[in-house]
Image 1: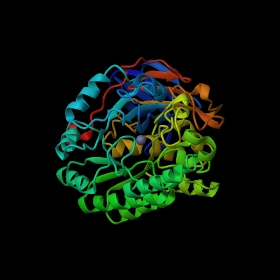
Image 2: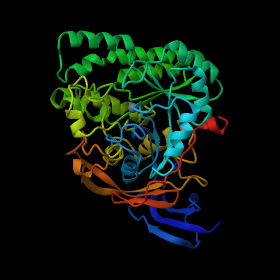
Image 3: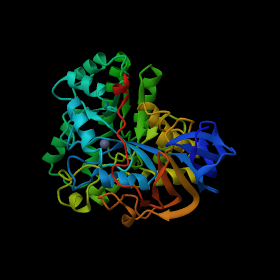
Image 4: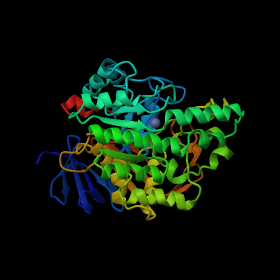
Length: 452
Ligand SMILES: [Zn+2]
């Protein structure tokens, strides 16, 4: 066996065979073995009483860099990620969209010294040409973002153009992340609400209705079924949307459901009280604890494939500076997603292994990073997180590292804490303090650039 640089001793290690108590051996930034071997190591980390989990993967974040650095940037967002145990992010920003292969390469180069954690980059479906979509996939975009309705200044993609891209990229395993809301339903609702001069938080759930989400998801799902394109439906807000996706999958479509903490914890009513601080779309739809419970059940039974933060921060001032119609959409989430899900895992809502699937293994599999990422197997990158299951902490605005400096989850007490985060065998954060500089993270080209 090669020289061991690091051994993590005596932790509860999450593996695909379950939780194993033992040691994790690291050499040259990779996992080389799990077990109890009698080999010398340059560095020993005591993980007694701690979980050793694969580094978390947040596949849906917006760091606005380049784009709008007043809202977030890569050094800040990726530092917040590292503190939260996230060792890989997949990023795209609507304020600076990537449509072409050249733009993707340029953005990856620009970010070479700006990320604390490893990162993939997604592209937006080009409004100019399907050739761009084919080329940007081949250049290494992790997924192609598709909007079915014009939102955040991103143009809606017509069904025929999406179908064309799926035909052109058939057999290349391209993945589309679809923001599903029906254009004509949201547009009509907006016109009616504005004609009535409605401008309270209550406009959001009427404007961005459940029906609009259901119609768009069903429609894109049928296209995927016919043409074989792999589609992830972003931020599923309601059990019925997940059930539509499950039905489409049973009919042979290659489709998955993503959800986010806001659909597992927040209630529809909150937007009336908090206005823009609960403005995101699709909006929260839960009316009761039972509604939230139905989402958790879908998480447990695998109908929801994974969780991402959809980190789309704005500062308090930015949220407060405009009407409910004009205020930016989105919530900060990179700081809090792992804390909320770990709390769920340590208080019995989901298992620890299900947590690992939801926030590490499944996004790694779907986006072509597995088993380099999303697992602690011999040969995997030594990205891992030490979690103290007995710690308790309260999420507070002061603990948010993102430029947002606030959280819809502030005040919530959570079980468990990320004690340390390791990226390719190097400690990048400890007790929420970030130790590694921007530039520690590497760009991870998507599967299209590796011949996929
Ligand atoms: Zn998003």
